[in-house]
Image 1 (cartoon, rainbow, N blue to C red):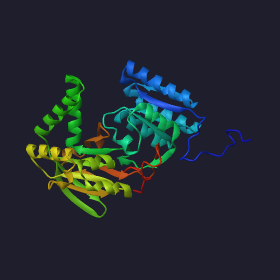
Image 2 (cartoon, rainbow, N blue to C red):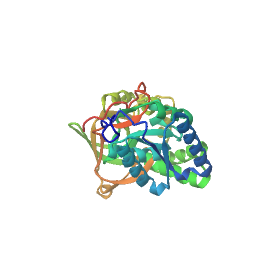
Image 3 (cartoon, one colour):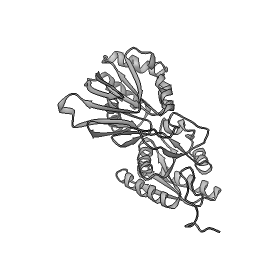
Image 4 (cartoon, one colour):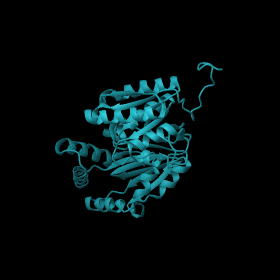
Length: 332
């Protein structure tokens, strides 16, 4: 009989079921939520005779915890599992992609576009059953200046909206009403137009727009009515730009998007691509640009490059759930 060290190496489409699953959890969830999550995970592991380790990190340490967990999972033939919302999932995906190890998700966010697109339930107990019974499948991810994004990335209005929303939540509490009020205040406030030089394929364009949105999630694009959702199945990303419009027109677009009719608006332009280079045309903003990716906001050095990642992320998910990011990564 082969010993474990002599056994054939695992393919990326496999996880050694005797190896531990390494669960990365954000300590910001709160003590009661952490205990409930711990009990649920440990119960599911016992019922399936699987082994797992729970790694809890503070928000400022989460990236380092995820990197160590991914390296550990790769060396032991296991998988790293993100437990949390968009920010936690993105942090773990960054580590899993860099290390080349398999990844699982226990979603605890609001919309859970990434999980839902790939057939992973929002209910934690059901998501655990997927994690414990399914195998890794290759899924497409996007890169923004070498930073992984799973659902979307953007410049302009959307990063401002996210920052304003967090400021409102810190002051008035976390609720859908507060989030909506913050978004309304951002849309009605004064906004700076982006003046960009955009290169994709053989085309070079100078554009003026309040926002540039890059999508990598079919479900999200379909919900607002954008035809570019289908292009993601062919290994592309979708870019959405708005022509310069006023506050009332912006609110009207928001309403149309809620009814799945955004793609029909004359002020909306969309294209698909595998690589796009974006350079601010104003000198004073050329060095650092505020960007958002999967709900997080950061400043990145320009020019900003968006592209399909050259290799896939291996996600534990039902094999039949072929969402927008269900293709293996394309070339860049």
